[in-house]
Length: 488
Image 1 (spheres, rainbow, N blue to C red):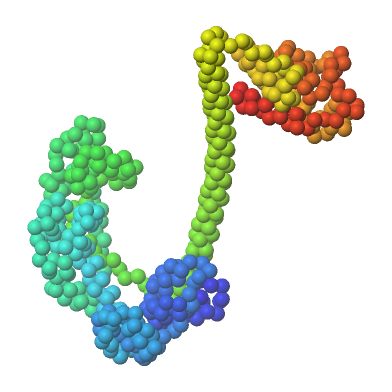
Image 2: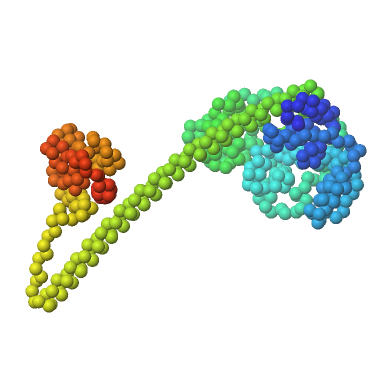
């Protein structure tokens, strides 16, 4: 409820945290010992899922596992954990005050570790961290080589494997404990006495690769800037130095020499503790920022989902269309293969019959009488005239043939679907439609329509009033026209 809209719960949580009281997350059971921990814990859940918190007394009993350090707040919870983790065998009865003390010691150790790492050059330490080095051991290495360079420290790191180098030195911990007990006096900031034109400190210049500096100077960079670039890129190459110069060319102190190195940076002053009013204001601001951030992320996610949905739909439609076209192409190719195989088989049978005749009678068989088109079935007649139009005009007037067949298909489909409509039973042959779209194909169109019971009456192709439309013949004609159109 830390980030919820319930003002009473929020005020209670903030008031408790401002007094350094301990809170427990009702959802996860985690103990929170500071305002920062509670804010981070609530932010991890996100808006709409923020957990509620309960105040915990320091006298409340807990059971701590010796092997896993797990803390349980009841015997039932402890028994459940034992069943989940067989290694949890030994338990000690403690209080929340004990857990708070352990957390305090953990934070102190972390603070001591941070203070220890601050005693070396942070730029070199970061460079070693990028290379996968343990930070504590890397700090030992830099202290051993006197912060000379990360390369020397890396050599020391690889050649020393003693376990104590992975821990903060005991003498440093002792000094840190004393420093923590005694408040340090503020260190006055030293005045910046650097002036443009002053050279860089000799102890810094002595550790630079001068050939890199000379190469940068030859490129036109001032010597002071070149030395600074090589120093801040840790002698890692001219390319890195040039990039550093490009990024820092507008810095206010770009033409000032490097500050003389110090043994260790001054400790940061402790942040003042927030008052209840300041804590409430900070929590409200955090709530607002988190809500705005989450709303922005949700809007961006919704836009991305919609974009992906549209793209997915487009791809699916394109794929379906492509598959349909491929299927049509395969069907047409299959029909062509079957037709060729039929013609081939027919020719083979005819040749075999001719050879048999010659063998029996010693001469060529008499020529077969040609079957007249009019004597064929309407289906075969329609196929003949559509095929003849294709054969005669596919090379000489392909576009005109395609236009003619499409127009004939419309006429035939109209009379098939509406056989009693007078305007569909009579097709004018003197109008623009026939003259421009059908007349360029001289032989075939009228013959095809005659097969479908149309008659040439001079200015039109008309069907007798009492004549029924042959739907089967019309359907077969449309089928043959579609086949030729696909081939075209």
